Image 1 (tube, rainbow, N blue to C red):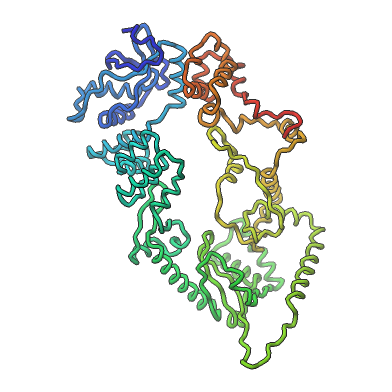
Image 2: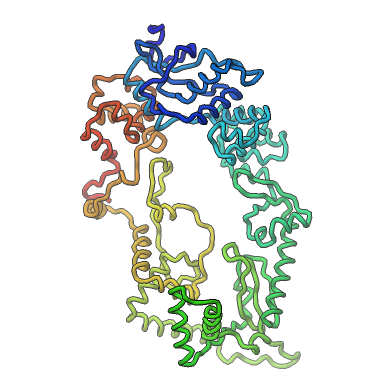
Length: 603
């Protein structure tokens, strides 16, 4: 049979008895439990991916698919009788090559960049096992997947057959298929499928179209009311399995429950603290229009005796050593509260509060405001003691006096700068009118790029509001020390660094020893697959010394070239199979395209 498999990359049907494991296969030892799980998967769902083989004088040796080969051999030893309707998988589809270099490359690629099942095939395989009565945990074990992953794939299995066919034909993306699971009926699913098939439509748009008027369980109103209370009041919901959230379908009911609970909480706080009035605000903040005609009251500062101050300092020191008992912590809290001061009984009796629910803090109280007293009818309205223009001038003078004093406070100003730039404060709470501009560094396709965690965290969208910027929060920030402050400043300012035409970027990169390969690796998806076939040919010739004698690379399709180069960059076994020297490997590890260099005179 040897000559039948000379053609490169032929897919042939070969009797199972004639196949054996190749020494090139990286998985020489496999646990019996893994083989058994694969055998059960093959018995139920069939062989969804062909094996990969190398033609030798002794026959075809499997370089990719060793676990599947063993599982097929196990089923054959059982007489193909594991299930009544099991069809023997013999002969076996195998993609075969007689080229040793190509077989080596396939073996490395199979190990480092094994292609996964198409999601549609995976969904059908799981559904077939479910139809046979297999439990969720059994399916997960058979495919070596988590139960959560299998549960989500089985949710896709409930889509109409036409939607799964569109997924298999790549007419819709996997994310689009996930969005379609929110359709209230099969008819509605197919209706939306027709409108989006083959079009560039964002899945989130489809989610909104299929779930109009719904509110996610992460919404501040839903969190405040509670899902159980909403359902107990007759609300309906559906679970968005892929977004790990529940969608509340009756927004009007949710708003009513939100307002009722908010008003009740506002009244509870008013009664407990002794305020004259309390107003529930349904928005996430108290607007200026609600307070513009009110007088703001402030808590009276407290004062401790010299003895109490010394006692407080001792208690605080013992707290840092974690040496306080319950009585000590209670005394510490009492002294701290007395020093912080508070509103007087007279203030509480003549003023009120606003209560609202924020996404970040939950139930929040804004204290305290005093309403203007009514003027008896017919009585002339008294002129204000100070006109508003004068009040604004005094405020400017007050700020100028503070700025003049701050000019001598270098350490304090550095603390305020670090807090403003890196503390995540609400925009209106920042003490300095400085707004840093982070430079765009997120590539369109990030595969192969791995920034340090403290830099990568800034690439994630953040819609939550930051701290309010209270004195206590600032003191807590300062308490972390100069090292923390300087680190915050360094990171914040580094994110604003931009390139120019002066050559400074290149100079700094050389001085600091910047190595792009520390955070970037050429991958098929992120870089190689986006280059031309000619570029890939030249790159292979540049990095692999024996490339001139090996023309098999040039004969590969572009996608296969990208995968083979990816294995060259990432897989040591591939390099060993090619016989590359230590110097060759060092050259590969240091290679970057010219566009990632730092030419003189450019940023």
